[in-house]
Length: 246
Ligand code: IPE
Ligand code: IPE
Ligand code: MG
Image 1 (cartoon, helix red, strand yellow):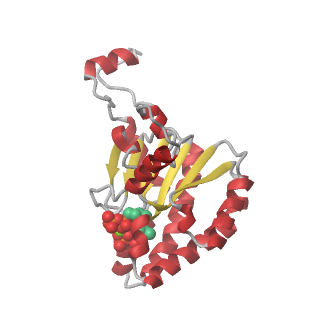
Image 2: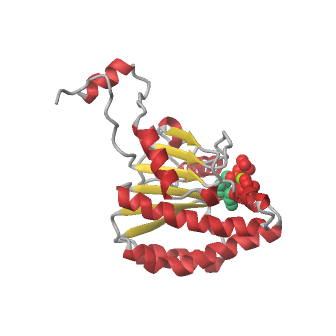
Image 3: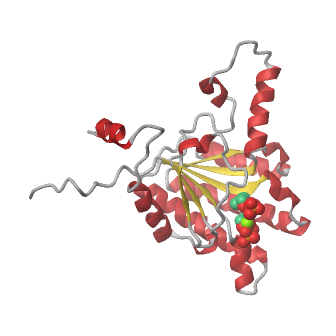
């Protein structure tokens, strides 16, 4: 059969997908339920997305679970979110291990309750040899805080030479992770909400109105299919990119 050169073949699947899991509260409100039920349902979405990501060969999946700014929510909601995190970490270790999935975390983890830090440490240790998918939970994470933290670490080390981008990245929470290829935001808001400000420089952005508790396997597959039909340019011309791809 003759190849039709006018129809571009889909590109590779993204190596690193990051998700702003938003809309739990709205999902609950629409059903006249407590926000907490929305957060609880959202865990099911996270499980579905982790499983699917591994199946389709995504190597890194980073989930924005709790922002540095989310501490300012009503005390009751913060406590409920911490309880859910506790529950997730207590039950998930074996499941992740069975899926050869490694758990990692970024953010100002020292702000988390001590027992959660211990649980997190335990699951991370348990899954450290897993190598099919790495999931990174962003907890008490803020992009500006991360950059300031990096700058302060460099100052504290007394570095006198100019710092390169490559050096700088080593001081971010994400050192060791590849750059995100695709950012997915559920819940329809067109904003970054302080997520991975440095790292998202050239990521493709996909926003869906689907609320996080409704976002499951098929929604992820749709986002990936959409990504594969995009042309990434990194500042070059379309011709240059197509020439490189040949
Ligand atoms: C995202 O859902 C979960 C967290 C921020 C912890 P929200 O709780 O922000 O839900 P909406 O945006 O109010 O619907
Ligand atoms: C972003 O959602 C943080 C997480 C998904 C954890 P928010 O609901 O906190 O963001 P804003 O307030 O709408 O910007
Ligand atoms: Mg929100």
